[in-house]
Length: 378
Image 1 (tube, rainbow, N blue to C red):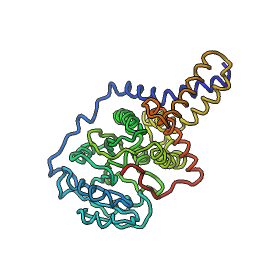
Image 2: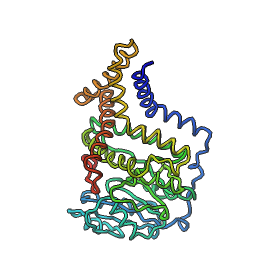
Image 3: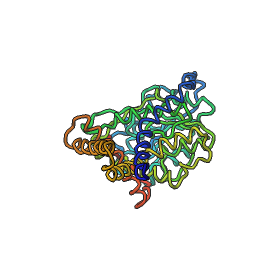
Image 4: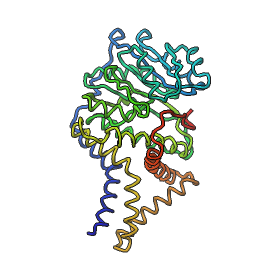
């Protein structure tokens, strides 16, 4: 076998492994491990810890009243719940509406980015548990209790809940991808801990909170950083939040490109890939889920380029090249014809490309501290 053929088959094998093989390996590894979530019980009201629920918001006048009222209506003792809205340089009526809606504390901060706003809110908060949510995410009434219940495990420092997406963008298959991602996250949680969280619904012990630099994101940074500090980051699918699905693949691509710029920064600058502080199982998760998933666009390019060069080497290479061309053709058709198999191919290509676009964005401009609302999610 030539070097070119080895490179081709290795790239194909890595792509198949990260998307299909890895979830199967996870499933096999957790078969004999007890599900610790089954032992997480509730607690009487007088034993529940004080919680600060923090919402960072920038120009969220349209949804902030509903968000505050949603938070105040959670099934959690009112005298143990502090609702904080941290307005990150809002230019609309976010601050006034949040105060009128009954938030316990509203911070009118200069524009510094989401993480800076969260850090400022944590400094002013009083809860033993710090919960975080986005302005456009609305929790089930029991979600906070369920997050807090998971934190009763002394090894658990961070817990994220499940986000369910509402709305049906005609061309966006994010809902399908998200269900796949949540299934993988549930398996990771049972094995060694999740490799990413979710800003829409999560909670952390106060003594485990990390004051990140403004260019970093909590979603990608908290789980691995807490593992390095001896905590376990887990997923609680029973704690549910809902938010609207982005309307189009174009808006989803733009959102993921921004997210991936931050993810590449975390990998290349802040030690996500460094195994120091990881156990072997968590290192396996990081390599399989984060590293290989993020380099998928480059593996696809390598597979396509080497396959073209090998096309005259036998029927197998003609077949594999035809399969790759078919995927590209299906993705192109999916942009104009909303038949679901074509939509899925189009979505997969866009999401995969967003990783490469995010790297390019990071190398050119770094990671912006500020953020904008995603089109179609309000």
